[in-house]
Picture 1 (cartoon, rainbow, N blue to C red):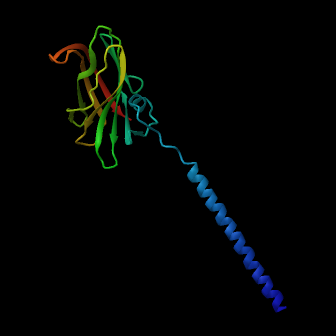
Picture 2 (picture 1 turned 30 degrees about the horizontal axis):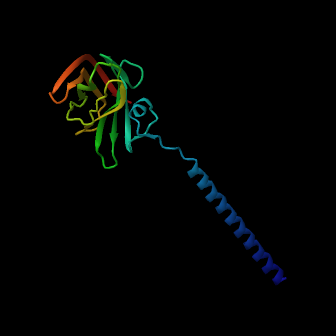
Picture 3 (picture 1 turned 45 degrees about the horizontal axis):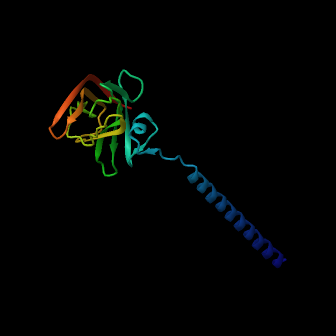
Length: 196
């Protein structure tokens, strides 16, 4: 009888141990499936996509804050003058180290066969916190018959702003770079970009 009782107890322990291992295996498999089902991070290096698509979370590896255009539908505006056209908007980015930038991003094209290189140049940006953004970098023009991406960047000294006011005065055309001869084509538009 003792043998029977010992055998019965040992068999019960082995069955419980096997059930416990099976449950752990199922839990580990369930955790793995959950990790595999995690949402994919939306990232782009395309400036126009970064501003148009609200689902983009990272632009060039930096976390994105989106802005909409006040009193307009969408996140971009289009300006045209003298055969030059630019579609653009504003995003803010923050690096892992805390560096904050404002990006004026989009796409530009120059359909004026008689024009020199043209670009967006004459404008001002001011944040709702009173910071005037200046000394931006990334002003690339586009020659006659061409189009190109736009990403003009400004360092922020303060937090990412709630609003950014833009006074877009003119597009600059390079007539003769060596002689420093330029022509300015009026745009005279004002926009307010509001943080989403």
